[in-house]
Amino acid sequence: MQEYRKLLLANKAWAQEKLEIRPDYFLRLKDTQSPAYLWIGCSDSRVPAEDITGTEPGELFVHRNVANLVIHTDINLMSVVEYAVDVLEIRHVIICGHYNCGGVKAAMSRKSYGLINKWLRHIKDVYRNYSRELESFTDPDARFRRLVELNTIEQVRNMAETSIIQKSWLKHGRPWLHGWVYDLYTGLIQELTLIRPGDLPDDIYRYEFSPELP
Ligand SMILES: [Zn+2]
Picture: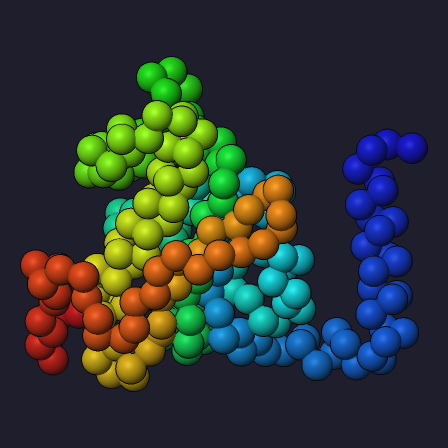
């Protein structure tokens, strides 16, 4: 059997299983979704968002990229965020990094990987900002783990610094911004940071909105 066929067979079994538990399992979600959470995670195959959070279809609005980065010029991510905040009215944004992240590891090296250098460059910036702390670690693995954490915390700050989030805070008092890290060895998630609505880390990033301007 061709390898990919097993996915289609597993899909049939999964759909059947859901219907046995709840006959309207798919019908109830067919026309609408109202997820409470926007999940921004790494593309890594070992971090399946729904599985590790025990969530069902309809609960998480998901965006994944290499090393869960929040970059203001990323039109793909920013479109997802705006839609999630303005249309879906999500109440929590969760940015979840993970230990042993290949993207973070690559950014810590001097190796050139081609186009992705430009993406990983943002993690090098995080490293530079925290170089004193990071270089105080003698154990390279401990340094790697800390950069995974700092990278996640910085992405939560990046999210707070978008006008999309700030406008929603002003108008609706949501969403909360969470930074989590997932441990591949234990399967457990740890909370790293939380930014509540209106709680901007640095005033220079605070936008003043006027009715005429977007
Ligand atoms: Zn990763």
